[in-house]
Length: 385
Image 1: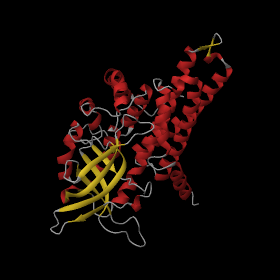
Image 2 (image 1 turned 135 degrees about the vertical axis):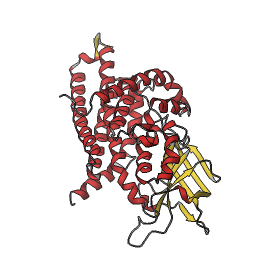
Image 3 (image 1 turned 90 degrees about the vertical axis):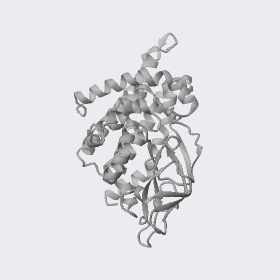
Image 4 (image 1 turned 120 degrees about the horizontal axis):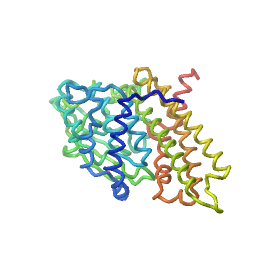
């Protein structure tokens, strides 16, 4: 079936991005992988390409294209090449919506130009040690000073993607105690300058996959955050987080689909080249059936994410629909990538083969952005169960 979600402009962007990845990322990726981080200077190259400013309004120096489809194309092209831009997806896909929707005119004028140029990388800190998906249980606090000029931030965060390179961190913290009948009340969002005294980046976490993505622990000890850097209204942070979760989950769903599609291509190429018993692995009926079954699952996942992508661009994607897309696509990717690795035999377990990296990278898709179990809860609630 002909795919209709992307137009000529999208495909032109895809080709520019594909050429950039081949020239700037593929030759350097193994070094980044071994180091466990993308060099900070690389983000300036992404900025020059225009990636950071696509969805930023023209009055702040961006292209003003209000579509998530360009981000989706980036996801597909990275999976196709089995590489990553590190934590840059958080900068654009996760942080930008908060800044554009909640930022004051003064904040946008201060932050957007450097956001676009790569001079100011953003990340977001939600998760805390011991709380996991229970964001309402966070214990990080931000108390307003007596003179009302700043908040005093104390606490810790973990699993923070982009945490090493970030210049500004959107920190979720309690500015008031929870109410007896509303645990979600009292959370606010602060855009914290990571150079402030008392702000510390702890361990860069050693993960199973996503090796080039800088994921860190953070701690805050009496960090003085100017009140001008409060994002949105005080004590309404939880509702803001909920508003952006559909896009975050769509992004994960699209990434999972793209990884599954790439895995099928990697397995197809490998089995067509690999000889066993004097024949290519692809010539055996079992290989054909396995790849055909995987392709059918990928086609179904593509239909789901394309429909969700169109709904999101129309402003119609609901929390339950995003949860459904994430649940389905991440489960499909898990099955497909595992089967494609199996077709590689022993070489599928060797990291120099892209299928091995995909296998490791894919696993977190069923955890971050809300676990599969949380997705089922959201869907069931929407069903009236």
